[in-house]
Image (cartoon, rainbow, N blue to C red; front, top):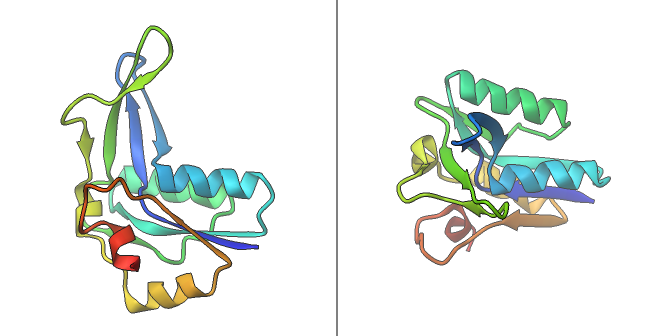
Length: 138
């Protein structure tokens, strides 16, 4: 099965623990799909051109995720601040999400044609962003 994940790639910053991880819902899905045995998994999104973007690309390469349609744009990779509550639940503080280059990313016709070659397309939509990558697919 060929799977493509279209969407968020970010750096997850756990504030109290002083830890950062490569993440984002789109990337996390792609990695888990590959680890669960999917033959071919691709990621469509973008990262910044700095060290955090390079970290994302290295992580995806290590996980054997196809990044041929993951754009590297001038600027910073998306970041999200995360707090962990006493009971272990994650909490996302207000103004803790910085989309950075994700705000500049749009699907090209080539990316749309690439998506059409897959058996399964996965993306996220929270109902709030009318210019999201998901809306571009509709």
